[in-house]
Amino acid sequence: MASLLLSLNKYSTRSPISQGLLPRYCSCSNLKKTKNLLLPVLDKPFTPKCLSVSSLSPLLDEPAETVVFEEEDDQEQPLCEVWKEIQGCNDWEGLLDPMDSHLRREIIRYGEFAQASYDSFDFDPHSKYCGTCKYQGAHFFEKLDMADRGYQISRYLYATSNINLPNFFQKSKMSKVWSRHANWMGYIAVTTDEEEIKRLGRRDIVVAWRGTVTYLEWISDLKDILHPANFRNDPSIKIESGFYDLYTEKENNCKYCSFSAREQVLAEIKRLLDYYRGEEISLTFTGHSLGAALAILSAYDIAEMRLNIVRDAGESGDAKIPTTVYSFSGPRVGNLKFKERCDELGVKVLRVINVHDKVPGVPGIIANEKLHFQKYIEDTISFPWSYAHVGVELAVDHTHSPFLKQTNDPGCAHNLEALLHLVDGYHGKGRRFCLVTKRDIALVNKCCDFLRGEYGVPPYWRQDENKGMVRSGDGRWVLPERPRVEAHPPDMAHHLEQVLKIARSDHEVDHQ
Image (cartoon, rainbow, N blue to C red):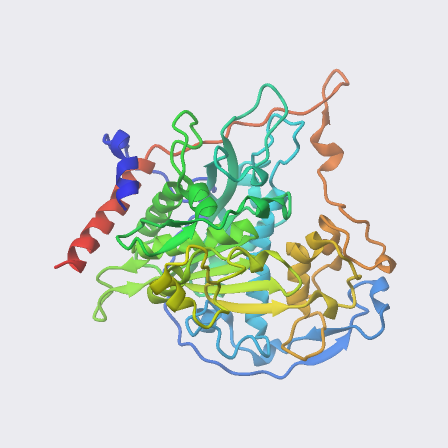
């Protein structure tokens, strides 16, 4: 909190509060606010049946043993009645084995929000826009064929690339670039469609963090150095230093990084929660690879700063807004004290991993949550390289999918689209792999070479048409100019100050 307070010294003059409707990038027609009653949470099992996969694609009759899993929707409760369980209020007990149908769809849905941060990212070093999002916020989901999801972008997130994680950032080779210090890191979005709000049973605010487009190279930058979080007053809670720097560093000479990624998240979440005060809300964080680490870190920060506390919630007193992380192929983030604090704060984390992926095994190869005496090592010896995973693990195995070929490419085992394919076919330990949602298997090869050759899907097939080049009026092929994206809204410092007031007030109460 002290570090956040120091960062605000230069913003002592409060900026005016935005008077327009929220979120910032959506059209007014999508912004009607609604109240949602909390419906009772029930848990009723259903019986699945398996049908032929031939309806998926003519090619999918090979191999013949593959089947598609069809859910009997008429037997299952609506998501709006069980959403708190699906978001982890009971740590997903009884929902993973066998796999609950609602949970499968929600894992895939939030995984696609994480994938969107890859598909929209400009990583072409020959473009002056390298390191940015390719799309304007108002058209983000439309450009990614996700307009039917019912969400609108609220704001984009940026971080300074001047930190010790060089393999994570993309930089242009051009002399004239959009920014020499910043990289686009993800986005915050909120449900605005009335039908989707009704289906979900609440208004959902999602924070999606970008992973790395260089696959596994960034792992070499992790030095196993733990840094005190300093978000509250317990120096024993520590985070891997590279993640900490990425989340908290800023660059005063860059308008996109004059606020840290942390400050951007805190201010925007505070703004949205104020605007939708009184509604049923959930906070959901998602990310893949290094983005998964940022998802856990930012969810912990929101809870540690007590932004997810609803004051004066009626006769029951203060209430917590459900705060959930869907982590995909993520590394360990902090030490055992960090893990224990996340549990204490009620941050729910579901970590989806491929058992053949190396990234979830780092950092903390020597001392981690699998070590029986880890707590003794941290408390007594103060071992400086002790890490622990947070939350509940869902482990899938790519060798169980008959659609995937054998490969020694570590990038395939780490690929997000492949992981979502595995979730689609997973039903529990020892159960047969069979697809459920009819999600196109071609997506697996979007940015890797993992599908078996008989399916006729070329590897690395996704790219912009003509790589973004368009023909000008005089017949020349050029890369078009992009509209300038807003860096930080004028009321950001104000909302950040409100975050600090909450933190100070709670700190004083704790010490009375």
